Amino acid sequence: MEEKPVKRFIAGAVCPKCAQMDRIVMYKKDGGDFRECVECGFNDELHIQPQVRELETRVNISKETIEAETQVLQFKPIAKNKDD
Image 1 (cartoon, rainbow, N blue to C red):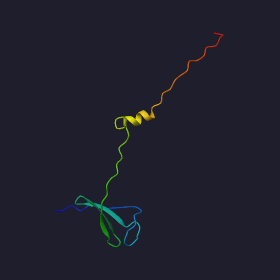
Image 2: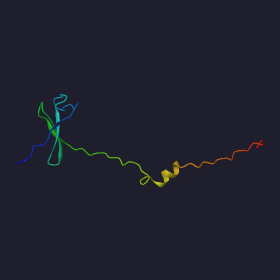
Image 3: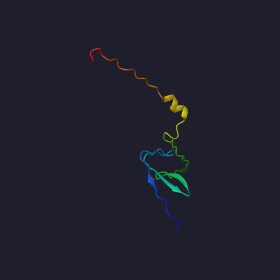
Image 4: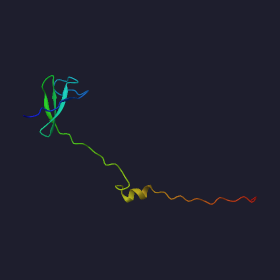
């Protein structure tokens, strides 16, 4: 027996065919992502590719970037008062 996919409503989504809002459900089937309008029956497969950006850490930042951000500070000696 084939298990039915879990369908979830997508808040604020508008159907591309009938233009009704809040009638779109999304579900996974056979490894693909699908959307379907419960009002008019429109359905299609979505080709969603997550855009994951790697977080910058000290390990994956280039040496040139680190050197460009490095600043050299020089401290001048404090002049002593003649009263001391």
